[in-house]
Image 1 (cartoon, rainbow, N blue to C red):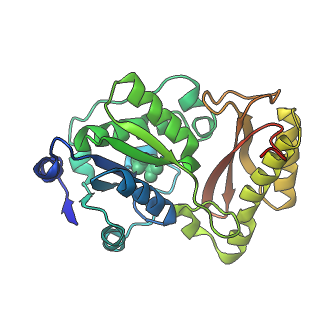
Image 2: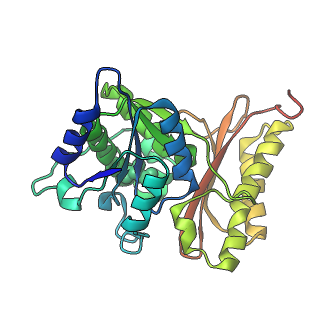
Length: 288
Ligand code: PAF
C-alpha cells in the first residue's frame, strides 16, 4: 500500500496505475476503521482494480458542540488495517491540504435531503460540509465507483443527489449496514460506550426491528408505529432525538404506509450520538 498526503501526490499515484481498463474504487472514511468499513472495502475490491481509502476527519461537518476534538484518531492502526484489507492507496491529507487559506466554496444539496432527520438536529450545515468534502474527494481521486454505508442513509442520498446533479462520472454504491451479533450497528462512535451504555444501545436496533416487523405484519399508520417505537425506546432507557418513518428517497414523513419506508433513529447514549435505520416493507411478513 502506498500513502499520499497531498492532492498532487495521490493523483500521481493513481495516474501511474490508471490505464484505459483500470477501475478505481473509493471508500471515503474519517478513520477509526471497523467491520463496516471493511465491508465497503470488500465491495470495492470485488468491483475495482485499485481501491483507494481516504482518511480525513473533516472538521467542517462537526458542529461546535460536537465531538471533533475527541473523535477517535489512530492513523497507524488504520493504515495497518487498510493494508491488511487490501487497500492499494491511502489518501490521508492534512486539513490545510483540503482547506487551504482562501477556501470559499460550498456544495449544498438543497431541500429535504439535507434539512430532514440529521439536518433538523445537527443543522443543514452538516450536509453542506459532507457534500463539499465528498465532492472534493471525488474530484481528487476520480473514482469509477464510490462506496457508502446504508447506516448513514441520509448521507448516501445526499451524495447520490450531488453526483447526479453535478454530473460527476462516479457510480455510487450503498452497502448494507454491518451489525454486531446483538444487532448494534457498527460505528466509530461505539468506542465511546461504557459497558452499561453498550447494553442500552442495543435498544436502537431492537426497536427498529420491532417497528419493521409491525409494518411487515400490516401496520399502516406511520404516526402510531413511530409513537409505539418511542415508548419502547423510553422503556429501554433511551430518549431518541428522533424516531421517524419517512419516504426512503425523499425523506418526507409518511403517515399512511403503503410502500417501503425508511425507519430512522438517532439517540444519545452516554456521550455517543448513535444513528441507525432499516427499510420496512408493508405486508411483507410471510412473503417468500
Ligand atoms: O461517513 C463518513 O465517514 C464521512 O461523513 C465522510 C463521507 C467520509 C465525509 O467526511
